[in-house]
Length: 272
Picture 1 (cartoon, rainbow, N blue to C red):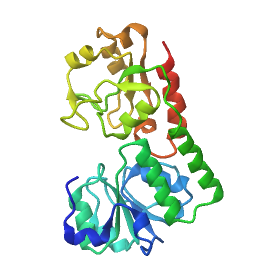
Picture 2: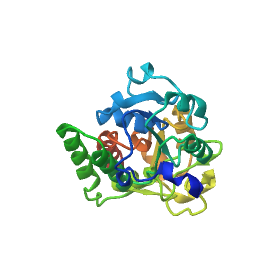
Picture 3: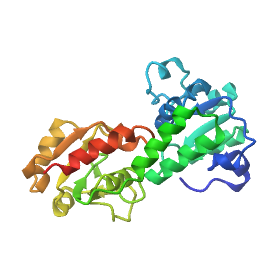
Picture 4: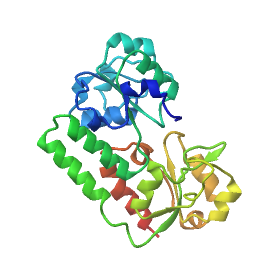
């Protein structure tokens, strides 16, 4: 997301801990993973609206008003609800919508999570700014301990696409890449510098010779048909049967889903 206009910065913060006087009674979330995280932190009761894509947890999110998608939220509807805080994300939301909200004099917390370290920092901001229970703080500590574990000594070369037609892969400076690295993976397209999510060709996939392929269910919903296509390639993952479909939210939704994701990914990556 390009830089926010300077005249709007007083209403937009990237670090909530630096805004101790910001009212935080009612919240609108424009980020599905953060909506779930708010409920996990015991703050779901503050939500007064979410996006159409905020579907977890059920049935709680189905009871909340919807204000459009992550890329096209209704600024008019949000303004009418008069939230104390709107939570957005640099990757998932558009700069133009964040600026429109600020022009309506709505406080926006613009988050950015590109690594497991960023996840820990985000959780710390929640802990600093909200009254979380002792159990919730303990849960955050457990997650941070997992993030601080040493990476396995054995590494697998992994291809983990996020899209097809064209094929696209996460590269460096992405949460998926960081999580895979923590779990003992070498992301075969980590070093690509042309994009955080570069387009890749079948020939490039073959040239990288991944030991393991992970096919997530989102943002593109990979299926057995896609797995069958990759099984035809001359790559180690096809020869050893290490092409796996998995719940995409486990690798792309930052927050407590990592409690499930890390042991699962380490198990898949350790299989020979």
